[in-house]
Length: 278
Image (cartoon, rainbow, N blue to C red; front, top):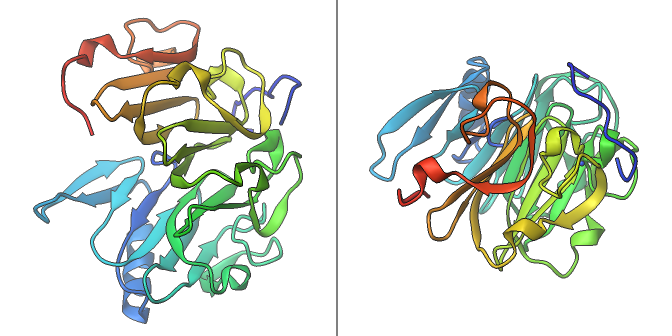
């Protein structure tokens, strides 16, 4: 598992960092543009409010119209949002992450029939799994189930999209995933994480994994407005612009001035305190 440690017992948990997102019409031409963007692999673009594109590397967001594409590790998705109600996937399928019912690879966009009629608002790709947010605030996941990263209460693979029942009653407004964990922000600003807990990246105070979504108690009382997951760490921005990070500290990725050990709960990034984020 690419150097990842196995989660300890207790459950088995883009990511902006693990994928990119593209919004345009669900026409054939937009799919061709998505495929061209996928060829850039680790490069992504994001449109500013003024419409000027900016480039980033290693993941990110490419936005500008009314459809969505998300690029994970060797697999890609594209979805029409407003009128299309269609999700297409292609690339590596060995973990079932394409959502087409098997583990076959696809060399061109393939319609995900299990989401027929479902309004898709957002889609994100992990290393071997995929998560979708619907216009009704529901969450679907599928693909590799190690560490419980799909949130269905088990470690099994799911080859077609399956709704995360444990989030029923919550209106989710944002989803993302890292390589081995998944996160969702509820409409009240609460953050839920699940999957592999190694390095403390779930934010629950230890390295235990969780196979169903669990609220991050260290952020209760704060309103999360943005969430991003790396392979070994997680970061959020609150409604006041404060930035919190947790997980692995190696190479200083947590940003707290040290490079050893792990941060098991969300910690305010003091260096940026007072600087407006979001």
